[in-house]
Length: 546
Image 1 (cartoon, rainbow, N blue to C red):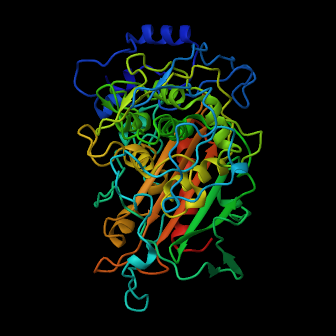
Image 2 (cartoon, helix red, strand yellow):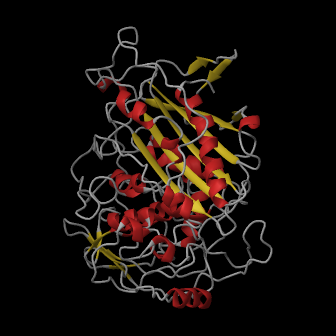
Image 3 (cartoon, rainbow, N blue to C red):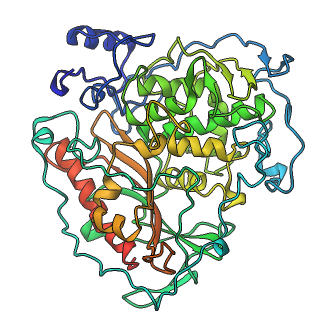
C-alpha cells in the first residue's frame, strides 16, 4: 500500500471511529495472519505506531475534550497449567512466591521483601531457558576480561565538527504529512552495527568516576546504590521550549556502572508517554511467564507457531506482519497483568511516586488468534489466563522511561537494578528479538526501532569507525494525537584500538528520554526540532563536555 494511501490509525480511537476510518480507506484490520507476503518497509508505515489508548477518566494531557475509553471487559479467570500439568492459581490470585524455585545465591542477590509488592517474584536463575545450564547467563563480561588498550598508546581520530542542522529532508519526508524523517526513518538513514552479537556487553571502560568539566568544576558518576540527584543540563538556550528530558550518562568503573543524571528541570514531570512504554509491557509479560512456569518459560517461548521474540520485534518496528503494534501492546498487557505493570513502576521495581502510573492499552484489542499458551523449544510450557481488567492511565516521567531502559540494558552488570523475576534471555529478547529469527534476522527487538534521533545526533559513520562496528542503540518511539513526539533510547559508542581493545576513558554510554509537545509550524518541523535537540546533547556527551 502506498504511504500516502495508508489509513491514518496511529492514534487511539473508539472502535466505531476506527471502523469508519478503515472503511473510508478501503481496508480491514486482519484478525488472523494473512496469506500474502510479509509487509514491505513502505507498507509498514500504514500501521499505527504511536497510539496509546486514553484511560477511563483520563484525557490526553492538554486535550480536555479527549474521550475516556475503557480497556475492555474483565474476563473470567481461567486455571493456570504449568509444564507438569498441575493446576495453579491464576495470575491475579497467585499466592506470594508460589511456583518459584529456591533462590540461587550464586545467580542473583535476593531483594528485601519490603522492596517487593505482595506477590512479586524474587530474582531466580535461568532454569529451563535456552541458556539452561549456563550459570553465568546473567553475568556480563567483567571489566578485567577486557584487554584494555593504554590511553597513551592509542588516540582515536579527532572528533568531527557536528553541524547543528540534521540531514535535510528527502523527497519522501517532504511529501508525507503523517510519517516523519527522524521518528519513522522515512529517508532510510538508519544504520546498524556491523558486528552482531546478542551477548554483547558494552566495551566502555573508565578508570575513574570523576571528571573535570571544560568550564571548571568536577562531575561525579555515582554507583547504582546512590540516591538519584539531577544536575543541570545547562543548555536551555540551545534546546526547544517545552522539551521534557532526562539524560543518564554511564561510566563503567571496575566493571560497575556508575551514573550521572542531567536535565533541564523537567525529568520528573509525569506525562502521557504514548507508545514508548510498550517495551515495559513486554518486560512485565516476561516476569509473569517466568513466575507462572517456575522459571521455565519466558519471552524465549513460542505462542502457537510464533516466537514471542518476533512479536516483540513487530511491537517495535510497526510492520503489522501480521499483527498491529498497538494490538500487540494490549496482548503483552494481557499476559503480564495491568495491576502488576503498575506495581512495577512503584514498589515492585522503580519506586516511582503514586502520580506515575502504567497499564493502559494502546487503542486496539489484543489479537484473538494468538491465545495465551506458551511453549519453549525444550518442551516446557505454560498456559496463562488473559488479564482483561481495566488498566491504569499511562502517566510517566522521562526519568522513569530512561531509568527503566537503562536498568534492563545493564541487567547482567548491575544485579541490584534488575527487574525482579526477569531473566537475561528475556532481556536479550527485548533488545534483539527472537534468537536466530528467520523472519527478522539479528536486529530485532528494541534495535529495530524506526526512531533515529540518537544516531542522527552525531556523525554515525565516525562513531561506527572508532567502535570497529561494535556499538549499540536500543530505543522506542511514541507519538501522541496532538503531535507529542516522545523517544527513549540507550546508546553504547565505545572506542576500540586497531587490535579491537577498548581504549579507557574514551567510549561513551548513555540514555536519553525526551518529550516535545509543541514547536514548529507543523509536525514535521517538530520532528526536526527534536532531532536538532539531540544534535545539541549527543555531541557534548561524546566529547564529555556536559
